[in-house]
Every structure is written in C-alpha cells, then in structure tokens.
Length: 90
Image (tube, rainbow, N blue to C red):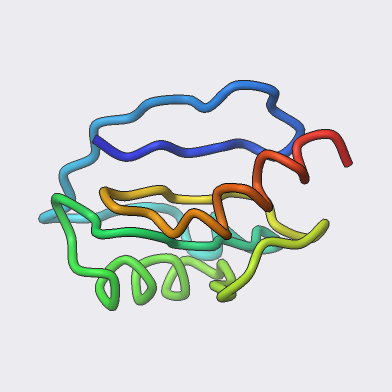
C-alpha cells in the first residue's frame, strides 16, 4: 500500500500500486514534482524514480511548495511526513 498526497489535498489518497509493466502517454507527468519516502512494497525506489522521470516528472529529496505528490512507503521518514502535514496548509 502506498499513500499519495495530492497537491492541495487535506487527506491522503490510498492506492495499491503494482508496477511490472508501465504504459503512459509521453510526458504525462511533465510539470509534476514527486518526493519518495520510506520503503516501497511493490517497486524499488530507483525504479520508481526512473518511471517518474521517464514520463517527464521530477523527483526531489525534500518537500516544498513545489511538491505535487509525496509517495509514502513503509517506515517513511518522520521529518518528511511532518513537513508534508505542515505543507498541506500552504
């Protein structure tokens, strides 16, 4: 189970994601910025980063006002989660 917090959302959206074959329109994530924290259950972190970048998204290491989505895995870093909670009201 992976939590995805959409930009401007007050509550996380829970998604079950299994990625073995990925297909999407070219640059479908263009203009979106992602932060990945914790251990992802169904995909390695590097593979998730590669997928995001392949489809035009950007992956950063810290939450900011420019963050579009935070992908939260098991044992996510408390400092990032705290920043997400604080940023939800920005």
